[in-house]
Amino acid sequence: MNSKKSILLLFVAASSLAASAQSLCLSQGEVTVVHSSANTGNMVFGSNSLTIEGKQYTLDNGTTLEVTKNGIDDNTVNIAYNGTAAKVTVAGNIARYLTVNASAANVSILASADLQQPVAYNLSGTSTNGSFYMDGKYAATLNLNNLSLTNADSAAINIQDGKHITIVMNGNNSLADGTGKLNNACLYVNGHTTFKGTGSLTVLGNTKHGITGDEHMVIEDGTINITSLGDGLHVSEYFKQTGGNLTIKSTSDGIDVGFKGVNKGTKDTYAQNGFAFFEGGTINITSTGDATKGIKADSTIVVSGANITVNNSGNAIFDTTDNDISSSAALKTGGQLTVTSGSLSLTSTGAGGKGINAKGDISIEGGEVYVITTGSVWTYGNDDTKPHGTKTDGNIYLKGGKIFVAASANSGAAFKTDFVFSISGGTIMGIGGKGSKPTANTQTYNTYSGVNVKASQALTYNGVSFTIPSIYNNSSAKVLVSGGK
Image (cartoon, rainbow, N blue to C red):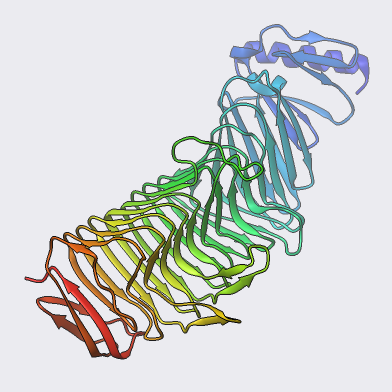
């Protein structure tokens, strides 16, 4: 931009801005910064530079200035994708803290550590070859406004900011990555993540995971649909769902919640590390890979209001790293499982697959729990793993709720533990190829052998009645019932 001409244009623009009390838009390439007259104050002119609200611009032939009635909210960045391009509009009050680059439809924003206020990033439009990258040191909100974004080379959205990131779904949104790349997930967040909104988000993880959160993740509402080659949700620290609808189809784990801070065999010792809390909403998971888990948490799983359906079809494998058999499961917990309300419907059809597989105690106190396994025994050399319905290395406490477990006729037990198996409440029916007998009880139970259990038919014993699932048959079942009226 010619020096004399630039000064004249800037003088005219400044005069017009003051007179109209509107906004000054300064554009360079696909990035526009909007300075409102209320915030602009004194502008500092140089031979080829201009400073507004602490932001210094180097002026060149690609710089345009416009006074307009259109403004933008403070602390806001708008990114509008359109095919192979993206237009970025930045609020002037935060421009000096942001380094913004828009190359074709790939947008990256770096926020300096001096930015000590939350920023709202509004993403909209469509691109089949675009991406969004953001890094910073303060909390931020991503508003997804009918966004359709595919990045063939890496993650569609990559948030390296380690603080709290709120993702708001407005309208119908979709994200996808390419195949055979190195990115960890289609949507990656380094910090704490909260999903909310009245809209939907569809995620296609073609390389690995669908969504990865390196710290805790919460789903409050909205609809999330994930199809992934790796885990659907891969979360560190803890996971919580209080509402909304989550659907996952994965060839690996559906939801995988890992310990945060694992280092040389140790983990950070703080409450809720590796926990999964299901407090509300609806979850529907299909996982198909061998040795996969529909829901997996390194520590405790608590179900207290959600409605969960899991179908797992993976077979067991021999894990050469651990030198042991690793079986699939609809639900796997490295700690305890506690169910107080809500519903669990868990199905495992693979060889050696478990419905529930726990390291710690299983306590069912309320709600509805339905577990079905139909696979065969999986054998490796002289070792094998059986398709048990509910298995734990700890104790089993049945205290309340409706509990139906149908374990495979191929040596599956409805309830398998080498320790305490206690019944003190609930309406219970356990069916299996092997029998299950409580070690302690304050509620009466009865057992039966040689029962012909047929698919889709009602089975009633001692006032306890359940309809047998359409995929389950057992011509010589062992049956446990308790809690009939």
